[in-house]
Image (cartoon, rainbow, N blue to C red; front, side, top):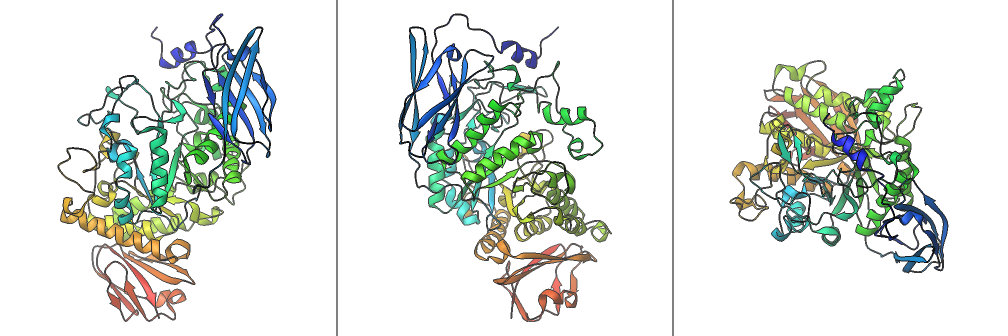
Length: 627
């Protein structure tokens, strides 16, 4: 019988190394810092027979509390307490067995005063990009012969294309011009994965979601130094950086998968078991336990081994890596992949550790669900669930679904239906009462896993502009996928690669450079200006970043809402029909009283009479109200 990859992975694990000489080849975390609130650190020690050594530490302010020995003799887990009096330096970890002595230094560093963990709020506009597909600033790191995937070929949609952090760094001025305030990359951590066979095609791990060494940024992106330099340059330009974290799984080439510390490091099944991808068993009060277990403990895909976060060593490893990443690189916010598939008590523990160390950091996870109840379960909420999440924010998939469904009906008879058109958006927002703070949700209308927004709305630029207006003016922290601002399009069918094409102008030899106005078409420049106008207005006008939201029931395809605060009031009025509309405003007196005129944010036009608004077909207007 042909062995599956799952079977081979398990067979390769926990193999004895016989009488190999004891040595230490790896320490994780690679270092720590004095003065951290998280001052109890579990150091993973790895090497041939490293777990057979008796360890001692003799360093002022550092105490070895316990040496944990596990199934695999190549591992030891050392519990260290770092006192507030400890000084930076090299901590010697000494292991002995008989006449054999092994010494490995582990560094304690001084914390720097660099900007870090600023968080993201409604005042921000996040730009999501895939580093491999955005810009190539250093062709010399496109491929390495010593890696499991040594190829790079832009002509092949599933292979690596050579984008890197240096290339992204060279285009931060473009993002500033666009009005972006925060950059979110898909994961930058090393993915030393071989090609996988998916649907008959060989695919690389260019997306970044199969980690093979948590403490190493992929050298094809530039490595640790390039990432730190990118964050520092972004901060110097007033931009924040969002880290994409993955706790649920790792790549099958991860170094500790090749030699598992213990069987319970992963979720194990008698035979390979995939997650059902079903959200319902988690919140269903009538659910069977096996359905919950399959959702949570089933593997995401066969080549991404599923970590068991109920194992305390796994939990410590992941939590310490999260803290180490923020402190070492200085990132500002934390996006968590496949949030709903993680052990939720572990997630609360990890979130709490990050927030204790960095009170301003924002954490928002990906829970791809379709209902408000399921979405609320994974964030701080007001529902009487048996489990209470402490996650501050999350990606707002429900609002994305509502926006896309509503926009597809704009300009059709369905736009005025009882539950159609803008009613979908209204109804999603009308259920915000379930969240402790819905303004911490990150909103979006496309991403690296979905069809591109322009294609979703049939390449209708009017719908495109209406959707972006909603995104940039309603509650929440808006996020936009790279290239949306220049009308990049495509569907996931036949493959994800179609929605992850290279940004034109980011690579040597590109015939078009969409980073410049001269390289864009008239339509692309119009789209860029539209996004830039709204995004920069949002950035400079606190009413859109801190104001309250009041929305009115859509009537006859007209959807009106206000953002208001002491700093001012903005009215957004959308005509979702295919005909120009006259909109009487007496119904909105609760918010309009006292205002006599307005400025159209998108056109600059001044309106001196607010009694009736004239709104073109399939158009959303953004009005800054004035007295």
